[in-house]
Length: 197
Image 1 (cartoon, rainbow, N blue to C red):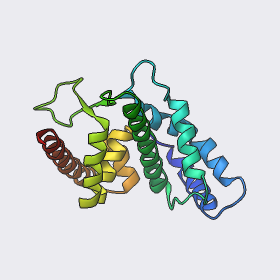
Image 2 (cartoon, rainbow, N blue to C red):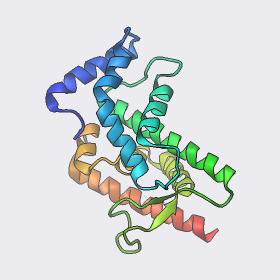
Image 3 (cartoon, one colour):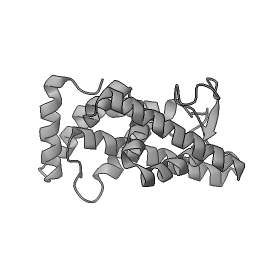
């Protein structure tokens, strides 16, 4: 589970301080959340990793840190917003890695395993999808419904359980399960359409 209830207010205070540019707040925030960020990174990589890949959890966390903290001050408004930003940045790092890999090795697209329960009827465990096609479908979902895209990012790319996402987004579990089903159906339709073209 992401952070204990007792430390939630401390994290929120650090996020606010980092957002306002307080000296040392951003570094302290990342130090406190490093293990959670490593877990997010592990979730990002566990479903698509291949031997010989140069992207590992530590590299992913550090690259995400550089992107999140680069330039302007950290622009998170809350704990939920911070983890959503972290998941999105990590997704972007992994997608950029896949694009570079695809460019270097034509036809060697990075494939990722479907998240558990994404398509229980048509997908068996271990079936895979092209990461770049999934990213494109998720971008289309973002245009249609930002919240559904956020749920997918946190579930698939951050590896969070629905209960954790419910707490982060302050959305009831039943609503979240409906959102997950809608997002899943949208992505499957989009990916099926990509295969048909």
